[in-house]
Amino acid sequence: MPPLLADFIHSRVCKPICAKSLTLPMGKIVAITNFKGGVGKTATALNLGAALSDAGKKVLLIDNDPQGNLTAALGYTPAEQKRTLANLLLAAIDYPEDLEIHLERGILHTGSGLYLIPANRRLADAAARLQVMQISQYNAVGDADRVCEKVMDSIMPFLRDAYDYIIIDCGLKHELLTVNALAASDYCIIPVQSHFLASEGVPDVLDLVRSVKEKFNPRLEVAGILLTMYQTRPQLCRSVRESVVDIYGGSYHVFERPIEYSIKVAECPAAGQSIFEYAPKNAAAESYRSLAREVLRLG
Image (cartoon, rainbow, N blue to C red; front, side):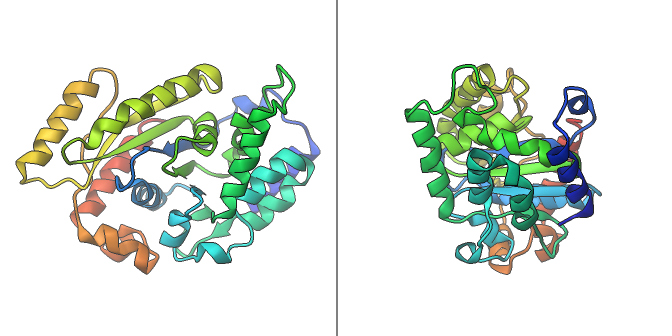
């Protein structure tokens, strides 16, 4: 475990978090989410994280999907991971005083310089526990730090000051895991595949973001809509981009450069590498660098 993180966790465990400490500069948390599959959420989380790391930032990736796609994309076998996000969520619910121990064991330092909290199918058990909390109204009224939608947020004070950016890769389902990720984040990025009707799910995501912002996380903002799998020449891709800008550009940022379509992006996970390791001169690599530059401008 990184020394800075170990020292920070020790200070938080031994000393309660005070309002003053939370006003200090902290790392930014970014959720990558869309309810549709195949839009490039995991590729965006991995390659945005790698681009930020290449820019000199310390980056933690969190796999928030029981399928463990981000974990696999970094070269790990999800089923073999004994310490995952599920352990942290359950510890935050049942044994918050032991969270330090779980964090020490649950963060992997990957060979690419990124840090990772992995996931596997045990995360579905944690999601079920969150649902039980919700149905049974487990939390006392007014106990905002213990509501089931903010369990992940209760972990973040232990991590924020140790990393410049924390990027959360969300799964497909409209469920409490995604709500938890949004309730813990400063920003969200919505990837949209550049083909006909691909943006149909965006209103549902935006509705969820507005609901989470209103109920649980007033600081949450949409960093932007990101077009993925974009081909410069086909008229359809250009039409989709124009449509997305026309519909959403007045209210939400649309990232300047779409992510170029490349088979290399699809091949990266099999190699357990980001595009910058696998094919650094590929056009998609420059697309992700452009995305990272825009994210860095968020502050």
